Image (tube, rainbow, N blue to C red; front, side):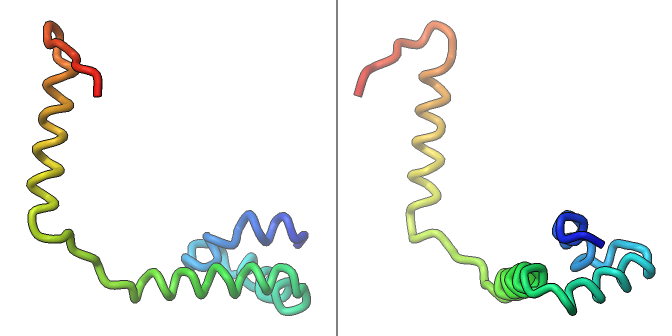
Length: 86
């Protein structure tokens, strides 16, 4: 496999979404190519960190203010409404 082929298939490889013979070729290439191994390690670590990241919550009142602003903007876009400049 070439580096381009490995990098193009890296997501499928990490998702375990490919044929076993392709997986074998990917492992072999990643084992001998330091550039592809670096890409593989970086992507693998990013996925691991992302999976362990906890969901953040909005500060109190933020959700209500956001909804209110979106409703105001929606009204501004309705036909016949007057648009005010900020």
